Length: 423
Image (cartoon, rainbow, N blue to C red; front, top):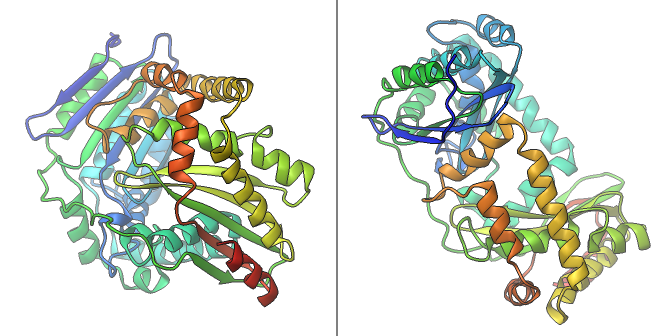
């Protein structure tokens, strides 16, 4: 088995792209197929279709015509396999021991190029996905992000839940699924990433298989032009805790400030020594979990702090979060704090990218939204250059905007009036 030693970037005659990222001495290989489609590419009636379709690919293909035979083939490789759907992309992957990548490519290729979508599986899977919807709705920790994005983006595909609605799921049928598949899945919207121990035979298999990919019409997503007019969204739920997400619009993928945004989120709530964790959990005892998240899309982004707090202390928690936001505007971060957070972020990245699947994900999540791919080495080099002045300037731009607040819980009118006064 002759292994590939250099990175490769190949376009087949139909426009299908294959990227190879070899890893020296790797014992595993990963095949990741990224598709430039997700809930932002859907109409209101289609909302949830990208995610539902992701489930259906595992229900049978031409070579493996039912869910069991397909699962048995993937299990026989002894690796890990799954899929994920987001607002702007969908991914399908298999991580296997070196020497088994060719088989993994064969299975993923047949799943994605030759699906059969049996009617009985469509009807059965509706029940599965509806239970998944209910699982998210029953778990505020999982659903607070969706509520915040609805609050921020409003009635726009960017603000709709990826998983869709129960009403839509019940209405999906084979014709709807195939029409969406033929429109959104094809050479123009699909990229294959191979990482780890990749041989010339593996690449040959990928080329042979995916040169058959059709050139689809592919509809682009609806652009996001404005944010929601309402900046508070409350989902009433009779639970003992209130889950909140308080944030602001931030920078999209590829923006000059994107790495500064990442650093700001880590300073605020990215570790046990972060400002939010120390102040609101350790000193005030108001939350078990509290974190600050920086989410990026192709044309927008946001920074938000999420926490679970007592229902009679929501306004206090919000005031403390806002105070930490404002502290970044008032004075520069110390050299000591900058150094500590940078070291943490860089070390986390280096550890994460030791595995072939994480390396594939690193490039896979870039390839659909960036013209030029950034290597981990390039990213670390640029991240190290961020100065205290950069953080102060970006914070002033960021934290003087309108804030958006999502809440899940049983909130009294007294607490609600206090909350409104802070915003």
